Every structure is written in structure tokens, then in C-alpha cells.
Image 1: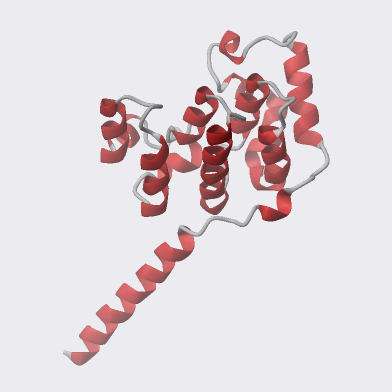
Image 2 (image 1 turned 135 degrees about the horizontal axis):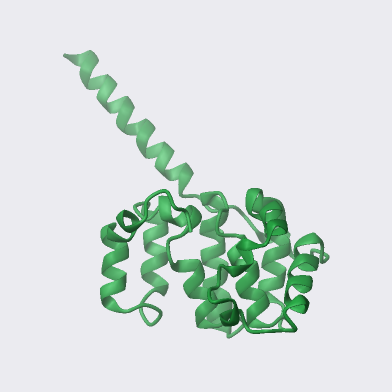
Length: 187
């Protein structure tokens, strides 16, 4: 009887520790003054190839993902995270370039993704990021699609979703219905 109680207590403690670790965002404070690299070059080239067309002209914010070269960034987005953050906060970058950078970061590991949500919140508050860019970060796709239940993700979503999504859409996402609409699709 005592053994079962101790095992249950140990299991509960291990679960709490795991959830705490999963919900700890990465520290992106070291991401200041990162020189433009391959991500910035790719986004610039993609933008120039479309003669500076707005991202809505692709039909979707995720149109960039159809480019085979984009898969290099999608497979290992954490390697380009600091570069993406610098692009997102750069005032000389267009909102279309910021949408493209965000789309390439949707598969970040959850600790990076939570930090992306925090940084996007700050950028939106400062006016450095438009509503469509923030909504792309908030809408569960990629990593966020699999962590809609995580308290750390939910608190960030609830902080920013009002004013971005309708009340019905927020309810749909927080209830898990959004996930059941397309589990495993990722985007």
C-alpha cells in the first residue's frame, strides 16, 4: 500500500517536473546583433523574385513553404531562430518579409516557440509587427498545433488572442476543436 502511494507520488512529481521543463522558453537574450545569414538571404531573394509582392498575393501566408529551398529552414528552424528574431524586429523589413520569416519558424521546438510568442507579443505592442504576423504566430500550426493543451502556451495565447481572433475562434482553439479539424497535418 505504501509502495503504491510512493510510486504515485513519484509519478506525479515526475510529471510536474516534465511539464515545467517543457514549458520553459529558451533564453533568446543572446540573439542581439546577429548578422544576416542564409535565412535573411533566402527571404530577401524570395521577396525579390516576387517583385516585392504582398504575402497575400501567394494566396496564403504559408506560400513560402512550397519553395523546396524553404525546407532547409523548416527542418531545423532553431538553427536560424536568432536570425529570424532580428529580421522580425528590424524596422526596415516589410511585413511580408516578417510573415515569411514567421512561416519558416512554425516548426520550432516548443521552448523556442514559447519564446517566439513572447517576442512577438513585445514586437506587436511596440508596433514593429502587424496583426497578420502575430496571428500567424498564435494560430496553432506546426509546433503549436501539438501543444495547444500546454498551460504555458495557453496563457500566451489567451494574452494575445483577444483582438486578433473572434471569440468563437478562440473558444475553438482552446477547446481543442481546432486540433481535431486537422490532426497531424502540421500546417
